[in-house]
Each structure stands twice: as C-alpha cells, then as structure tokens.
Length: 104
Image (cartoon, rainbow, N blue to C red):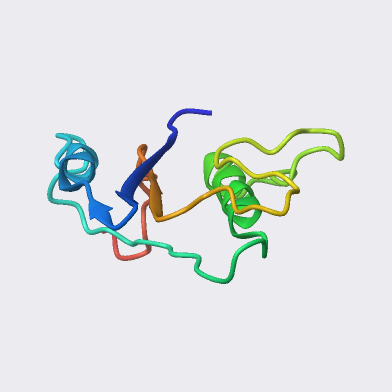
C-alpha cells in the first residue's frame, strides 16, 4: 500500500505545513478534492473503518476488494484496547485520483 497516515491536528495544534505538502503536490494541485471524514466517540471503530475504505480505494472497487479472512488491515493504526489510538485529525498523505462521469 502506498501512503501513510499523517497527523495534521495534534493536541489542538494545526500543522498547516503537512496539509500543504499533500495538496500542493504537482500531480494534485488544482484538482477538485473530496474529503471523507469519520468522526465519533472513542473506541467505536473509526480507524478500522478507514482501513477498509483505504482497501476499497486502493483496489478501485474490484471484486475481492475486501480481501481474505486472514488478510490484515493496513493503513490507520487500530487495536482493541481501553485507550483511544488516533487522536486529533489524521489524513492519508497519498490522494486517490478518480475519474468521474463528467471527466473531473
């Protein structure tokens, strides 16, 4: 899998330089953007859901995109524990460029 999660809001501090590094890349600068956000209480599976979304986008929605029963989820860190894993706002640093029916 290409890319990695990048925290842009940590302990109330916004890191605009990290966001700019992603959206000002030559291959994506000027393209329309769609941001998918998942929000909710601690320990409700947000990072787990993001990993499945990454798997879907990485495989372009092809048959079998969900993977095998024993195939580990990769991308955002997730684990079963009492404490939350991801805090603040974290984004994926590798944009997914898709073609729409309108060509945008």
